[in-house]
Length: 58
Image 1 (cartoon, rainbow, N blue to C red):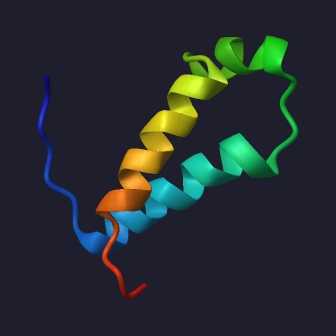
Image 2: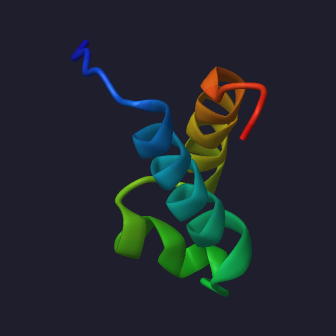
């Protein structure tokens, strides 16, 4: 496991980028893992963790 520290703003940037990749840009499921490096379900689970860590007020 690797630990890093992020500011709230950095965490929001990461959340927004991952959200765009998962939900905004149209990438077919068969191509998603090739382009992103992980299956969509794994990235979506990570996005949920990041979203839960975001400050309540954004």
